[in-house]
Image 1 (cartoon, helix red, strand yellow):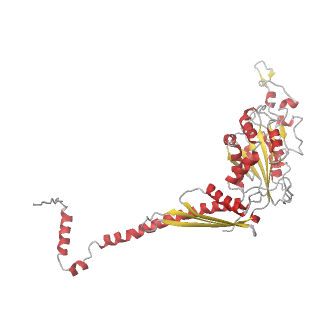
Image 2 (image 1 turned 180 degrees about the horizontal axis):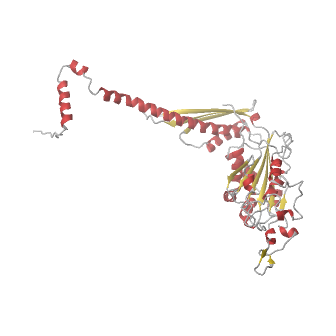
Image 3 (image 1 turned 135 degrees about the vertical axis):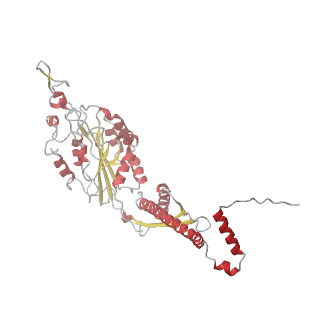
Length: 436
């Protein structure tokens, strides 16, 4: 004997009555059942829900695909540019391998993965073409449309990259508190070219045809001037609470600006390293230093000019003049009282006596090329209060200039000196327009 247990479910009175009525109709004729319109809305809603959800999923997937293609395109552009700008006359196969490796290193996987890539270098035309396809998992599931394919194309020619020269003038505060920064510069000096080239490449900047660098170490022309501040004691006597009086060269450091010429790298790496390592952090006085005087000296550098002929016979078509500044202190304003009393202070014909004069110099195309000029400030522009004299300008004024950026802190520069410099250059670098 078999027995089955059927649970009893007690329905609410209204629902039970409705169910009995429905069951009664089921026992009627087929025509009656087919003509019944009860619960039409629920049925229609249920049937339409799936396509609505599908449309939403398609919309979301489309947005993800657009973002993926943007990432893929920028990575592909960087790869073909790296291939056509490679130095040393690589073969077509070497360029194609370089492009593939570069793509794999810079493409940041966010929502999809590269499923195929193809690069071809035409030695006759000097063009590199690239096609990359990425696969994007969808929200529609395996049974409908499991993946979307996203494709990017790019073409660059050797002519897409102009003959470019990079000049970097570094203003480095070498007062007593800056030993860590000075050490970071010195430890990178001998391998500066290779480290910078690699960091720029990793940041998506094609190789430059020439890289030159110069260093200007600065301290303070009038940092001890605060020692001439006087006070009156209760007996009416005048005294110097900070230890003065001082005058002449005692107002500042014995050597305020110690500047090198430009070194062309990598050929002059040893000379560059010798100069960089020939200084130590010392001096200073009050909190601000003579940073604007260093900026002025850097602006007056012997920059590479468009039209100049390089050692390899190429003619420069584009220049990148970069001033990078490293400091943990503010800057005395132009015409600072005690700086002007220092007999070694630059003449007015050399160092402008106000901010307007400095800005005019920065915006003068006969002084510095205006197209790609940069001031990269590694520090805190707000740290320019004068402990003794209440100066509230300094770097706060300079940060309003065209071409100024603050791409990293002094701490980041000390930790990764060359990488942060490359990041600053890359942020302001204008990439050529490629054929997509």
